[in-house]
Every structure is written in structure tokens, then in C-alpha cells.
Image 1 (cartoon, helix red, strand yellow):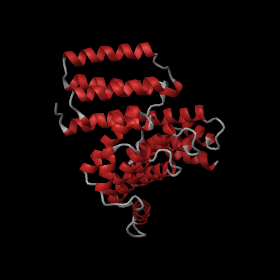
Image 2 (cartoon, one colour; image 1 turned 90 degrees about the vertical axis):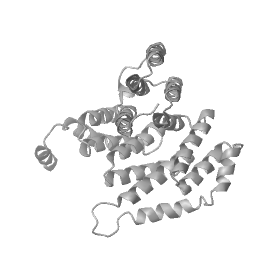
Image 3 (spheres, helix red, strand yellow; image 1 turned 30 degrees about the horizontal axis):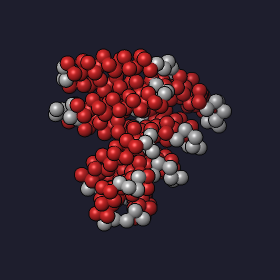
Image 4 (tube, rainbow, N blue to C red; image 1 turned 45 degrees about the horizontal axis):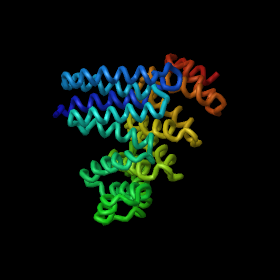
Length: 307
């Protein structure tokens, strides 16, 4: 089934907003296993009876909501797999890729992640991003050394993974073409973000991964790509909760919502979750202040800061 690109793009951003923005999984009610399975069964019946785009869209949104509402990793796995299954039935790889990426982030060592990581890599290969593809295949082989297809593709691409550090540094250095340039070059911003994401997918346990994601997020924020910044901040706090950057990532996620997107609802959710999760963090007072004054006009807020 073919859906118009514009419609896909709209739904894609809705999915991202639901999956990586609201924090109800931490501070709200959690769906029980029986409840979510019952809900998905009803939506699946509807989709099987009438496989229209409208019903597919409703099903995708429901799955995304469930991903937010559950704290149970086993449930999360089943919900993601159901989303991927529905996408396959509808012959839609666009949204399937969203769920496969979430699956790989959530379960990097799981057997299914091997195939899903391979699928993600194929999309990079189609875009002729050779260095990123080489790194992805290298990451697959480090976790699953018996993957013959990954080995063949790794040998096919005449790039060396050691090039990564050089190109990452060069991209960062050339982000601003001149000292007077106010905004970074958009192409180099996109390249740096791509490098950051690729490294995280390929080497989730590498000690540099979290720092690269944080730098990628800050690059996206500076480069006026707040949605991507939020996604990368969410990646750090949600999938690396024990890292020293997790709390700051959650705070910056909320701050980006407030300052870059003027989305106070999502900012409030992030700030409240921060205060719930990290009551003793050095940033707690600042977050509490931002939450308390989120509806305060800028002029009044500046006066409060001066006093």
C-alpha cells in the first residue's frame, strides 16, 4: 500500500512526538498487560477488516501511546513487534523503520536487533552514505560475528572505520564557515548528527556513545533542528539512564521544548519527570524555577532573575 509522502511525514512527526516526548510512563498510570493486549486485539481486528490508511494511522498512534504508557520491558518488546508486524501487513517500511530503531535502542543485544540493525543499515546504503554504512556493518559484526551478509558488505565497502574520528572532527571544525557566521552550516550539522546516530546504533556500549549523542543533540539545537535535538536527548536519558549525562539530557529536552518550540505542555512533562527522577540533582532548583515560571512573561522572568 502506498501513502503520500506528505501524509507520511505528518504521521512520522506525530509518532516521534508521542514516543519520545511525553513522560507519562514515569509519573502516570501504567496500562496492565491485559489492557494493552485487549486494546491491540481490537485495533488489529479493525485493521484486518478494513485495511485503510485511516485505520492504519489509528493503529500506529495507539501503539505509540502504549509505548509511552508502559514501564514493562517485556510489554514494550511485544508492542514494538506488533507495530512492525502491522507495518509489514500494510507493506509500509517508513513507519516500520521508526519502530525498528526503537527496538534496537531498547534491546541492542536481542536476536531480532541483528536483522533490524541490518534493515537500518540498508537505508543508509541506499543513500550512499558509505562511511556510516561501514561503521554499521562493523557494529553488527562486533555483536554477531557469524553474520555472513554483514561480513560480505563490510568487505565490499572500501572505507576504513578509522576514518570516522577524522571526519567527525573535521565536520565539527567546519561547522561554522567563518567566525562571523551566526548559524552553523546546515549540511555539516546534518552530517555530524548522522555520524552521532550511526555510532550509537553500531556501538551502543562504547564509552564515547553517550557523549556523541549529547554533542549531536547540542549541534542539532544550535543548527535549528530542535526536533532532532529532542530525539537525541531522549535517546540518552531513556536508554542510558545510569550515565552521568542522563539527568542533563532530560532537562535539556524539556528546555528545548520550552525555548525552541514553545511547547509548554511537553516542557512541563519533562521538568516534572526530572524533579521526580532526580530530586537531589544540582540542577533541581533551576528546573523547579523554570517549571514554576513557565507561564511568566519574559520581562517579568528577567526581573525575577535580577532580584
